[in-house]
Length: 151
Image 1 (cartoon, rainbow, N blue to C red):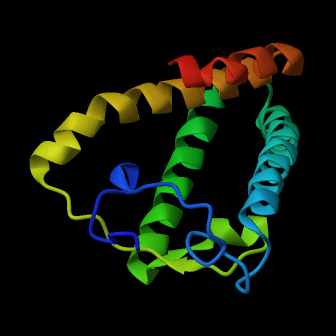
Image 2: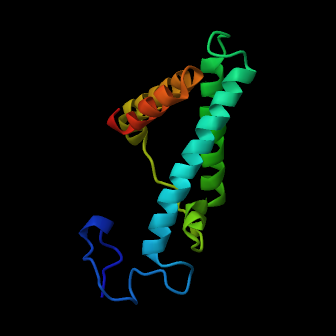
């Protein structure tokens, strides 16, 4: 038996199909993982196409609206994330053809928020950099986006 109160990293890995498997609730975890990667990369391609089109529609890289587009994207996605937390719904499992799970609202303190602030600023900077890069040559944009995990 697995102690559900133990932190996830401290739980032992199980080879039993009855524990830790999502059988009966959708696709097996291994297929769900593959599908998640497929949807991630396909989504990334369409994201790049959409961003390039949005920047061209706004006047291109010289029109001065690149940062506005980047900021609006971050704002809309933040509102979406807050809505998902408010509804306690985690739709990511749907990409792996699995049943969605209820998502708990995190118990955050002011200190927790302050500790995550540098990561948030770096992530916002990486996003803005990729939007700026996609305004020029999309291939260069891919290179910048590939470097996001490093930042």
